[in-house]
Image 1 (cartoon, rainbow, N blue to C red):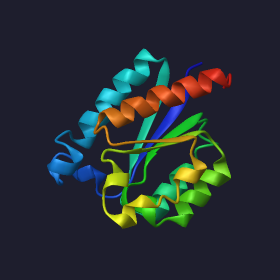
Image 2 (image 1 turned 90 degrees about the vertical axis):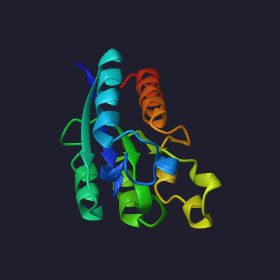
Image 3 (image 1 turned 90 degrees about the horizontal axis):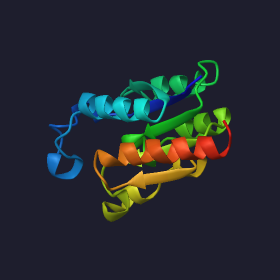
Image 4 (image 1 turned 45 degrees about the horizontal axis):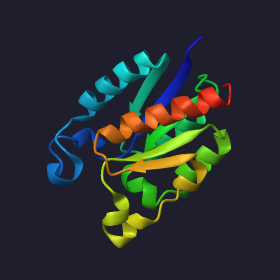
Length: 150
């Protein structure tokens, strides 16, 4: 039985490809997800994706991940990275291995982007590699799950 990975994308990521392409690149979210789905297949993983601009919907999706049989989470909380104790608490509550992803190098941007509430509940953070950040996160999570025998 293949492992199930939940990909969660937060606010405004539905605008990728048109939103500040000099920062976030020109790939659209559907393109990124399609590429990641192919990569997941090569790794023997099943990928479920979810995007919402609503913090509550994101919290609900994380909260339902255990009953959905999810083995690990890749999350780009977007702006909620820097503000959401609720997302942090949801990740802590389900205690699934999670990797935080950012297209841009958030450490090289505005000061308010340097603090992540969600990162401390993740096994790692990958940022600054554009759409490739998602593939790197998927590979890292797959290796982590394999090493833990999950």
